Length: 115
Image 1 (cartoon, rainbow, N blue to C red):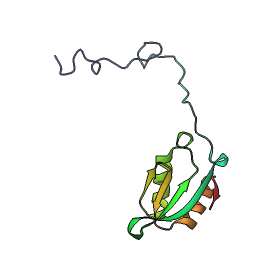
Image 2 (cartoon, helix red, strand yellow):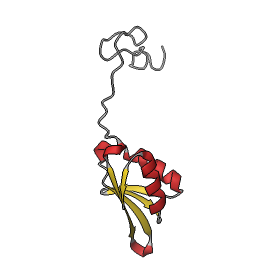
Image 3 (cartoon, rainbow, N blue to C red):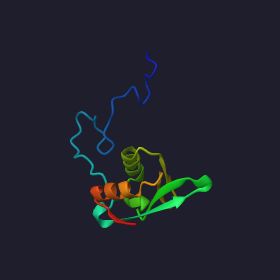
Image 4 (cartoon, rainbow, N blue to C red):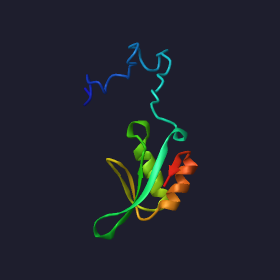
């Protein structure tokens, strides 16, 4: 008797909709709900702010979290700028004065940019 005998991992995977084995399932693939708003219909507002101890950050506001994949966007922007950053409650923060570079990048991604 194997370690996983009789458990869910011992059984072959089954389709959740029809109950047949996944290899024999005839169900059409489920369409993922796309609630993301295209970048062309959004406006990003950029500003440079000074934080504690004189640190400078570039803040991107105006992008709704439920209409965007903010973690993926933040990763792309941080990699392009070569800087750190974070998602804050009111927007994305990129370390340093990256205003010109972010303005160009967001325009390339299709966002309308102010600031």
